[in-house]
Image (cartoon, rainbow, N blue to C red; front, side, top):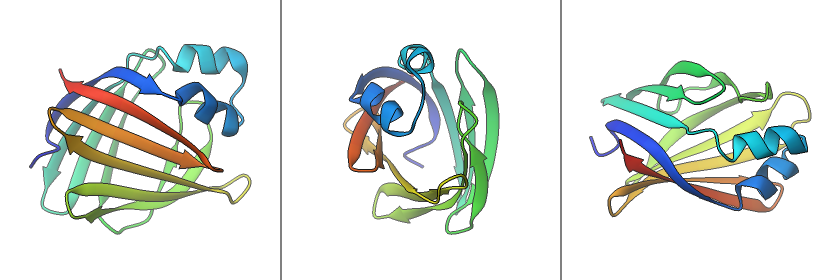
Length: 132
C-alpha cells in the first residue's frame, strides 16, 4: 500500500503553536520540534502496524480502520479514537481523556512525502516526512 515504508520527519509547519494549544510546556515544545520522528507503517487490508521512533520514545501501535483504540502522546496525554480511510487519506478523530476536546489528524501521500496534519482547538499544524 502507498503508506507502507519508513518515513523520517523532514520539516514542520506551525508545530510549536499546535503543541502550545495542546497545553505542552515550552521546554517540551522546543524538544518536540526536533524529535527526529521516524514512522514505519505496514498495512495489511484494513489493519495497520505503526512504529513511532523519536528521541523520546519508541512505541508500536496496531489498529484496524474504524475500530476505537487508546493512544498516548509523547507528553503523556491520553486519547481515544479511530482512524478511517477516506479516499487515499487516513483520517483520525481522537478525544482527549482529560478534557474531552477533539484532536483531528490526517495522513496522506503528497508527491514523494507523507504529510501528517493535526487540528486542535482551531490550530492546524503539518509535519512532512520523506521516505527513510
